[in-house]
Amino acid sequence: MSWELFCFPDWKLLHIGFTYNYILLNLKKGSSKIHSLHDRLIPLVSSKPLNTWVKSTIHAVRHASAGLNTSNQHNIARCIDKEREALLRFKQGILDRCGLLTSWGSQQGNRDCCNWPGVRCNNQTGHIIELDLHGNGFLNFNDYDCHLEGKLSDSLGELKHLKYLDLSSNNFLDQPIPAIIGSLSYLEHLNLSCAHFAGEIPKQLGNLSHLTFLDLSYNLHLYANSLQWLFHLTLLKDLDLSNTYLLETNDWFQAINSLPFLRTLHLDLCLLPSTIPTPFSFINSSSNLAIFSLANNFLNDSLIFEWSYSNCMLFTYLDLSYNQLKGRFSNAIGYKRSLTYLDLSHNTLDRFIPRTIRNLKSLSYLQLSDNSFSGPIPNEIGNLQSLIYLKLSNNLLSNSISDALHNLKSLAYLDLSHNSFSSSIPSFLGNMLSLTSLDISHNLLIGVIPVYLIIAL
Image (cartoon, rainbow, N blue to C red; front, side):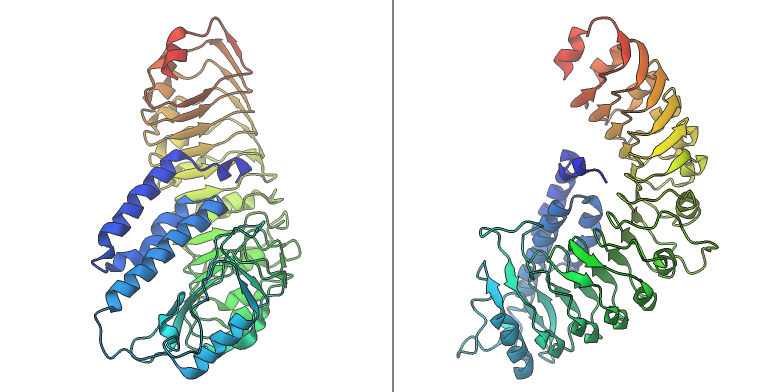
């Protein structure tokens, strides 16, 4: 994942826009589909700031939906006194920079914590089952960001029935993640990302045996010496530990491989050990893994290819960029027919781009820049009718620019710069009506830039 991905591609924003309109249309119907939108939108978002924005949109709609669904219900249980007091103790240590907690109080008329912003209760028992207090900050907070700031109270441990906890994008002043969170045994969703936690990940998180979603990403001073606690989270489906220091975790691969239901995995910027421990097996590893990102690490072991190609038949997203992977780009990539996003940029992969790439007919994003690929662009690339983004810059590619690119009717971004392409600029580039960005600089192309190409772009 290169930093350029923080500039979000317009085509993804368009998809998100359509889906957001879909949310609004279904809101008044109380559609249960709203609660699965995380699965539809978050996989599209590799940029963390926009990931946060999408989550904020989803959660806002979920709470609005919950309000509409319960507004006409009667005899709804009110919150438990002990749990209300726990929330008020939590509030005491927090500076609320966006007024989210202003209505939290013990005064008459404010006592029912089930009506407090960010709180959701079980309608029958009154127990708090959801606490969503996410902010909108990322890494560098200012007074204009809507976020909470302060120290977390252990009073959260009183919320024994909590299933959903989101404290992401706040500023908890580099305190350790409270070990008491590991006592919330009913927890299914835990998001502490971008929240300025520091120190070692508490092994008590391994007690959360019902957890299906865990995001501890982008806490800049968080680390783990072992991921042994992950072995106990056998129901986990979505895991993001990006920007967590994992250099000493020699068991990271075994831990990930032990999660049979895993479908999304992000371990970007983790300084993972360069080699995968051997022997390793595919036993218990998930066959549902669709999103797999290990970008910005020191990986130089080709076994990561063997594992990713041999397993995870539902792959849609693969990002191994900014590593130290070397050698041949395996023909086995052609078996991953469900791939829509592939980024292997900034490695030292060499030789030819495999012709089996023709099988990736669902691929919309292909990033192979900054490697050592040589030879021509394979004509088989013309089979990728869904391709929108293609970047092959900073390689050793040669010969003429392949006419097969003319078949890519949806292509909007094309970068072939810093290669050794020769002959004249092909005329078909001016007829690619979807193309909005073209870079063919720093090659061996000859002749005058055609006027039609300037007009087309």
